[in-house]
Structure formats: C-alpha cells, structure tokens
Amino acid sequence: MEFINDYLVITLNIIALIFSILTYSKYFDTPLKQLPILLLYASLTEILGMLIKTNENFSIVFAKGFTHYNIAIYNVYDICIYLCYLFIYFQILKKHKKIAKQGAILFAVVSIFNLWAQDFLLSPQIFAMFTGSFFLSLCAILYLKQLIKSKHKRTLYYNLSFWFSIGILVFYPIYPIMAFIDVFFGRSVFLSLKLIEVFHISLCSMHLLLIIGFIKMRHLKAFLT
Image (cartoon, rainbow, N blue to C red):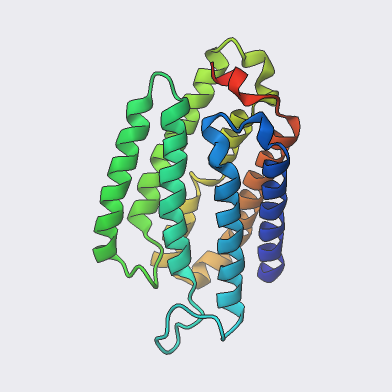
C-alpha cells in the first residue's frame, strides 16, 4: 500500500509540474515564478528516494543495514523548500515581511544546530522541521488574511497564491509532528496510528490544491498589486 501511495505522490507531483509549465505565462513575472523548478526538484527527489528505498544498486549510505536509507536527500530537499517558500512569502506579504525574513534566518540557524543534534544521513532534522513549518504556516495564514482583506477577495479562487497557501496549511503543520512520532516513538507506533496514510493524504491534497490553482488561475500579477 505504501508503495502505491509513493507512486501516487510522484504522479501528482509530475502532473503539478506539467500544469506549472503550461500556465507559466500567467505568473512568470511574479514571486511564484520559481514553482516549476521547485516542482521538478520535488519530483526528482521523490523518484530518487523510491529508487534508493527499493533498489540496492542505489544508495547514499553505505553502512551495513542502512543502504536503503533515503532520508538525507529529503533533509536537503526540506532545507531548500523551506527557504524558497519563505522567500516567496517575503515577497508577497505586505505588512509581515519581517516574519518571513526572521523565520528564514532562524530556520537556517536551527538547521545548523540540528546537524549536531541528529545524524543528517539517518534521521529527519526534527528541530529544523518544526521551525520551518511553524514560520511557513504562519506566513500562509497571514497571507490568506491579507487576501481576504484585499480588493481581490471576491476572486480568491482564481488566485494561484491562494491555492498555494491553502496547500501549505494542509500539509506543513502536521509534517513535523508525524516525523517526530516516527523518530522518537518508532516506526511501529507510526504505522499503528496509520500516520503513513495521513502523511500521503495530506501530501497528495497539497499537490491537488496546487493543480486546481494552476487550472483556475488568472494572471497572478493582478492579484499581487
């Protein structure tokens, strides 16, 4: 079942990537212009992660018993994604840019500390994940509040950044919590609570919301002015 869910995540990621390219002319001059690159990176990370997990010929950890560990590539991915997304919010937030900037700085500092607290190759970077997710979710909430109060509140459904932010709030608030349970309570507890299903559902929902945003969007720059 987990194998099937992994394929579903990759498929939705690639579909989102395709739509991001097809609709690029509508947002190429906005802060969200980096989405195709980030979605391509996400797709390649998921594919590489599956290859490492299922194929013994692919490995980044050579210690006996850990050759199937793919956590390191996701740790690198998380650092890049948190910083890029916070930079997007730094650009599109009007009154709360400082929160996005301070969040990115604090996240970078905690990520460096986390290198000593947990093995980067073998364990999710829990402290960094909580920090990044907190500020990213906070920025998404502040941006949605900004949209609701703006002159464009009646056209939210045509705004890509609206769907992007909703997707952030569907996945990132629970992402570090699930990782924390997996690391500190064990995989057996994680699976018994069916959190793997929760993880895949929330991740797929985030991709679906982004796909909906690409389909329904109008030219985004109009919504950012």
